Length: 124
Length: 124
DNA sequence: GTAATCCTTGACGCGCGCGTCAAGGCAAGA
DNA sequence: TCTTGCCTTGACGCGCGCGTCAAGGATTAC
Image: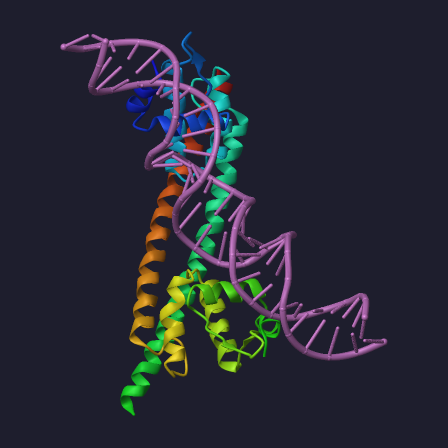
């Protein structure tokens, strides 16, 4: 299938697919006229990338999964590198959660203070 | 004081201060030679911006606080707009927390699945 | 034949908060 | 006077994932 078909079936755009190729994530065969040609495996690959993006992975983070699929594995996370990436991202997300939680506490503390001062003003 | 002094006292750079000015956050008097001239109030203002940035506020989010300080209030969050901004950011952060938590769960689920499959392989 | 719809590559735009030159003016010390 | 070190404005760079023209070739439908 051609790039427009793949884009439609994957629910994305031709621009995104060409961008993936520029990043070395998605290589295509070329028809004699220069058109890109994709197969079902490529669709799976794109789907994998989208799934991972949906859980906060950068394009670069999806690379191990794509490589895993291309090396013949049935699923993108059947390789050690993919598992390791899961762990790394998990730790990363935990870091974000900690920071966000601290930030939330900071904002709430400031909000409380400001409201307390506001009530003080009223009482005067 | 001049821009270099203010930058040093505030622990930031002249570039940042000029950027704040370009965003309408920090206006300076000008000396006859064209140099920017700041006073202690400006230092407080910059400090307020930095504090808010530290808890995840964008520069634009700090605007109400800066305006509040400039309108003569003793602290940047003594105005209704500032309080409202606190609330808005709190809700925003809660939204991020929810999304991150969901993402964390997603990653962990995928990690578990992948590990389960790995153990299945080993047993064969 | 021709119009519409695909495809190709290339390049700029965006949001955010500055960093980092660049080219020049102003002030102060030796 | 010369150097040094401040200051001025202006403009490009960055990271990320594409969106959005642009200019042209290929294919398909009529």
